[in-house]
Image (cartoon, rainbow, N blue to C red; front, side):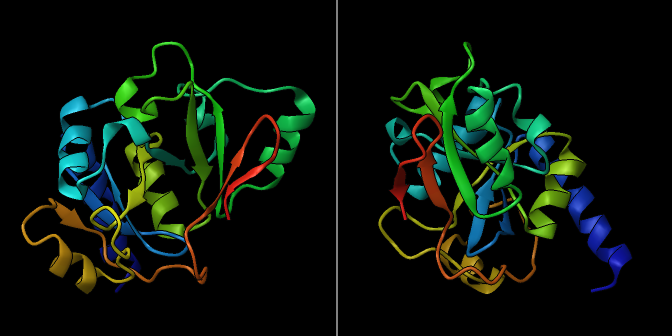
Length: 188
């Protein structure tokens, strides 16, 4: 793909998200499914598509830490320094959710899972959209996630508004999830 075509596709995907649509895109290890985190209807549609319980909560990805500021509170400076040092990269952290962050994002928790992605297309999508987006693996609950645009098409025929095709990063498994307060690994 030419850089111009790719930039056009990224802008188109950002518009789809801004208009309440669902987009699939490559991340560090697998394809992700994303939408506007503030759009309840879009998030509910995504959860139904994945057969995922709302109570589990979702991950948000961003191009930089400032895009996560509307969603999470900072921790003590030493903890935040460790978290910021791990980004961008395949490191998801559970941070205290800001008051008013919807339950449809955080599930039954007082925290929210967040990551600054190092994947160039995922980061470009967040920049074009102008903020963090929902990022959940492209799979039906308890099934293997898609690792290519073709796999996404086969697993979600007609269920998505756009697939931003591209190669996944080199990671062999989805991001590590850690507790921001303790550093404890919750998902290796």
